[in-house]
Image 1: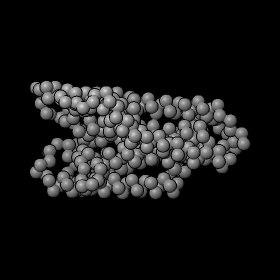
Image 2 (image 1 turned 135 degrees about the vertical axis):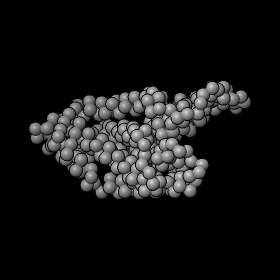
Image 3 (image 1 turned 30 degrees about the vertical axis):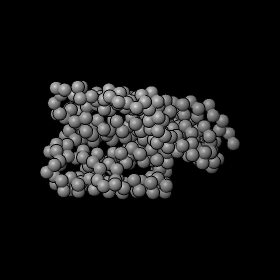
Image 4 (image 1 turned 60 degrees about the vertical axis):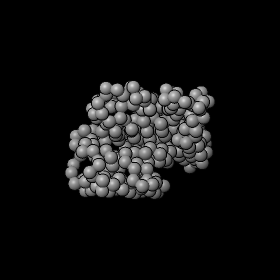
Amino acid sequence: MDVVFWKELADHFSSRRFMILLIIIVLTGLWAAYSAGQTIRQDAENMPTEYVFLLLLTSQSGALFPLATFLGFLGPLVGITLGFDAVSGEYARGTLSRVLSQPIYRDSLINGKFLAGLATVAVFWASILILVIGLGISLLGFLPNAEELWRMLTFTLIGIIYVGFWLALAMLFSILFQRTVTAALGALTVWLFLAIFVWMVAKVASGIIVPEPSTPEQQVQQANIETMISRFSPSTLYSETVHILLNPIARAFGPVLQEQLAGILPTPLALSQSLLLIFPHIATLFALVAVCFGISYIRFLRAEIRA
């Protein structure tokens, strides 16, 4: 597995399509962080004195999305790019039977490919975070505190798990279809459906269950139904997790009644409290990764590999 891991890792970082996608995402993400930093500097009087570095990831400047939202939307493309031809490419080139004729077990091959893709995602996400921190220091003129660094580190781990799901899903399609184009189209179709169309389905379903809400209670009920349905998408789980983690003042995932906020001081939550709120989301994302890769693992061990 060690040999497969390093070979696949070298292939990923020498792949032209991955480097092109990486450059596009990094440059656009840095521009979003730079615009947010300029906005913070220009409106420093109205900005909070705590957790300023987190605003580089969450604040919106002009028509640009916040950096965390941008990574949540385009991050899956990195996982799909790394995984859609992990096995189907070997089938197309006729090299899979040659590789497995060597003293390399099937489980070592699939494990090495997945871990190499996950390591590439980790380097990609951590590099963006380090660049944002360096850019923030140069723009704001001071260092992030320990709380901000821990929240950013947790954000990186969540991002790796989130993109790891799309990597595992793309590898699953690569094993099931054995054709590179079909595997890529299948993974992209699932991504578009879970990222866009699930929101539409949730909106329509909540409108049917609670039609024309007239009271605040009914409006909150409709919003909660819409949120519950949209949580079938990993993109929703990621966005809600990031919202709580990078906004320490946030205490709920959806709208709440004014009566529920009575007596609560608007003070930031500690990192441990924020992690308690988002733990079910993180566990669900991790479980999705485990299920997708587990199916891929079993399917590959039973697949026919002879030419």
